[in-house]
Image (cartoon, rainbow, N blue to C red; front, side, top):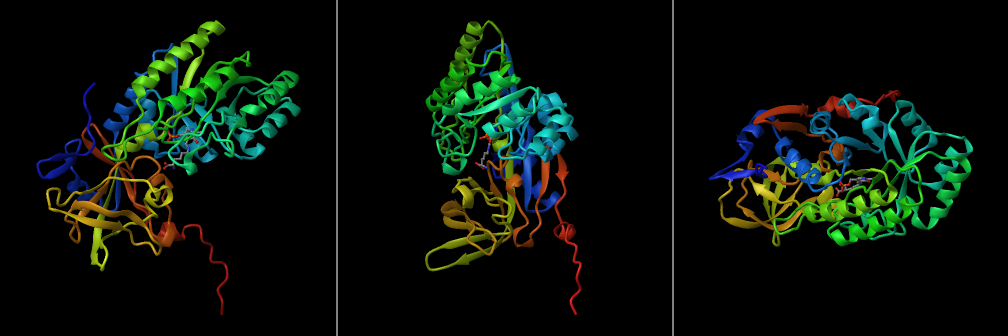
Length: 417
Ligand code: LLP
């Protein structure tokens, strides 16, 4: 496999697939999200090649980054799609996915939303006994998957852990009997079982423990076609971080899955639904420096962006590596890198970065997953443009918003005298 690197520093300039980052800033303006498809491809292949099973499907969790050009690119690699809303389903259809290549894995949605998804013909995943009961009462024979909560505490922090006992997600493993009773009494067509225990899972052992619980549960379902083990594969946010050892996980997982299939006498499909692992590293977020501000205790670099564009540091205390594109070899100083929002919106506290000057271009790495996707119009600020790099060329894949977008759905019906 060709080694594809993160944004590269060539002597004194940063490049993305050979394109100087400063040129992209000049051409499209700032702030700007840029995605490198070579990295998406590298990650996708890294994942696929880790498993040796007969049938493997990767459902890309498009909540991480759902621009239709990125969706189309992932489909061209062979991915299917995991969705959580009708909006995401429609984006995937627009990007060319067939309904049978899409799985709907929502949480706490109405029966109406499930019905609309079934009308489209996508796979559906049910995560509560109440909806299963509805399917049983109404003799709905649509093939379904059930999401089981194995009650394993995994995931980078509480907000992104979904498999623990207090989590709203999935049907508790302790309620397995109730699922089986509904299945047997109403003839529910359960073709898949699923779990997803959280994002940023560090420990392969913890993940494997949860898979053992799901394998045990799966043994009770006679008509399974697939088992979906969700996601949570971790990427490196800091240089010294570790990424999930996907090769090790793939080996162990393939052995367990092949054993299960052999016992069952049927080749099921092994499924995963990663988001972060596939797109996180592909993204770089660029912003301009508005101001350098000195206080008695801090040196602030104030940027023309804020948590309206990149919320992960404030929301999860997530670390994003910060690079000064305009002065890569400058002497390092300690900066608190902040945004322009009317609340605390530090991207970093006292971080050593090559000297930042007004107008310098600052880059945040690992900005492909849950970054643009979680952006908002808070403070009536417009969302940035998105650019995709494909085979050494850059393409605008989303225009920057403007004031008309902020006003678009406001109706202004009363003119007060
Ligand atoms: N499957 C299900 C059912 C999920 O809920 C998620 C993520 C995924 C798959 C994909 O997980 P991933 O491979 O991306 O870890 N906004 C947070 C992450 C929230 C994840 C929500 N669900 C963040 O920025 O870290």
